[in-house]
Image (cartoon, rainbow, N blue to C red; front, side):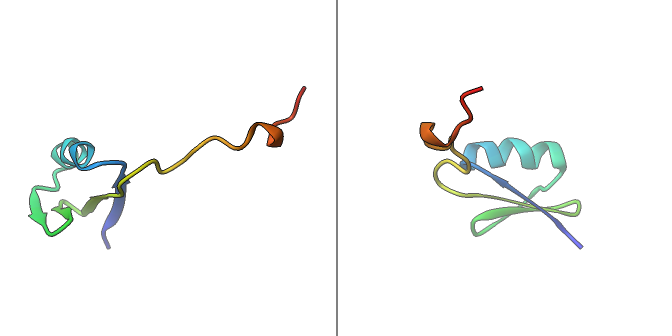
Length: 56
Protein backbone atom coordinates (compact mmCIF):
# COMPACT_ATOMS: atom_id res chain seq x y z
CA UNK A 1 0.00 0.00 0.00
CA UNK A 2 1.26 3.50 -0.87
CA UNK A 3 0.95 6.62 1.27
CA UNK A 4 -0.47 9.62 -0.58
CA UNK A 5 1.06 13.01 0.20
CA UNK A 6 -0.56 16.12 -1.30
CA UNK A 7 1.19 19.49 -1.41
CA UNK A 8 0.07 22.93 -2.49
CA UNK A 9 2.30 23.29 -5.56
CA UNK A 10 4.76 21.34 -7.72
CA UNK A 11 7.90 22.90 -6.23
CA UNK A 12 6.92 21.69 -2.75
CA UNK A 13 6.21 18.21 -4.16
CA UNK A 14 9.74 18.06 -5.57
CA UNK A 15 11.21 18.88 -2.16
CA UNK A 16 8.98 16.38 -0.35
CA UNK A 17 9.60 13.62 -2.87
CA UNK A 18 13.37 14.07 -2.52
CA UNK A 19 13.13 13.68 1.26
CA UNK A 20 10.69 10.75 1.08
CA UNK A 21 12.59 8.89 -1.62
CA UNK A 22 9.84 9.12 -4.24
CA UNK A 23 12.27 9.43 -7.14
CA UNK A 24 10.17 8.28 -10.14
CA UNK A 25 8.42 11.13 -11.91
CA UNK A 26 5.05 10.29 -13.45
CA UNK A 27 2.39 12.44 -15.13
CA UNK A 28 1.35 14.75 -12.26
CA UNK A 29 3.09 13.00 -9.37
CA UNK A 30 6.24 11.39 -8.02
CA UNK A 31 6.32 7.79 -6.85
CA UNK A 32 8.63 5.51 -4.91
CA UNK A 33 9.64 4.17 -1.50
CA UNK A 34 5.96 3.54 -0.64
CA UNK A 35 4.84 7.11 -1.41
CA UNK A 36 2.85 8.90 -4.07
CA UNK A 37 3.47 12.65 -3.88
CA UNK A 38 1.22 14.99 -5.86
CA UNK A 39 -0.10 18.54 -5.77
CA UNK A 40 -3.21 20.66 -6.02
CA UNK A 41 -3.06 24.12 -7.46
CA UNK A 42 -4.20 26.69 -4.90
CA UNK A 43 -4.61 26.79 -1.16
CA UNK A 44 -5.61 23.53 0.50
CA UNK A 45 -6.99 25.18 3.64
CA UNK A 46 -8.27 28.60 4.54
CA UNK A 47 -9.55 30.59 7.45
CA UNK A 48 -13.26 30.64 8.23
CA UNK A 49 -15.24 33.84 7.84
CA UNK A 50 -14.70 36.16 10.83
CA UNK A 51 -18.33 35.79 11.91
CA UNK A 52 -17.73 32.06 12.56
CA UNK A 53 -15.09 32.61 15.29
CA UNK A 54 -15.90 32.61 19.01
CA UNK A 55 -15.40 36.07 20.52
CA UNK A 56 -14.00 34.80 23.83
